[in-house]
Image (cartoon, rainbow, N blue to C red; front, side, top):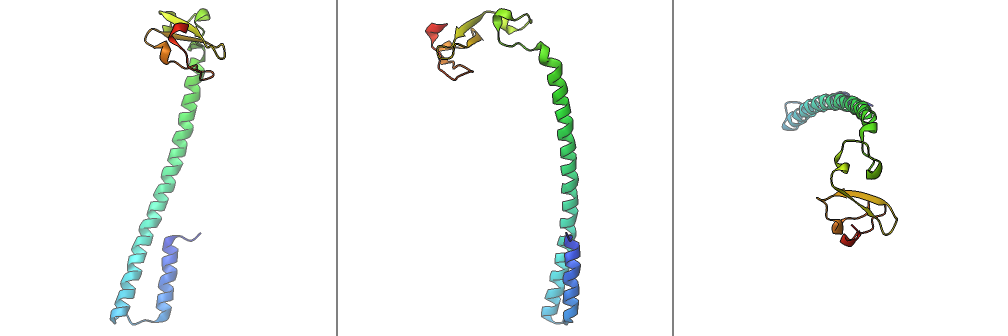
Length: 135
């Protein structure tokens, strides 16, 4: 694919082939427009190079971030509470004043603390609305 600068050089060649008079008003206009197109083409080519460089850099950052996420996710796998408060051996909030509710629709046991209003809760497994009296 030709760069903008190469396309401008072709345009200049076409204009020179016409042998237009650069001293007439029309000739001056054509010469000025070609100079403008040349300057714009140079700037666009510079911007294209910059964008390509930044895209490469962003891809490298994305790969590095993926590696960091994998590392952190792997390190924390054993330290996360699975939400099963009866079998939770970890020192987490699940063991501090928690309640268990069984979803009336799917039977999933849901663990929550007293900061959550059970009347407004929905089951994370099936989306069914839970009621206060089921606490």
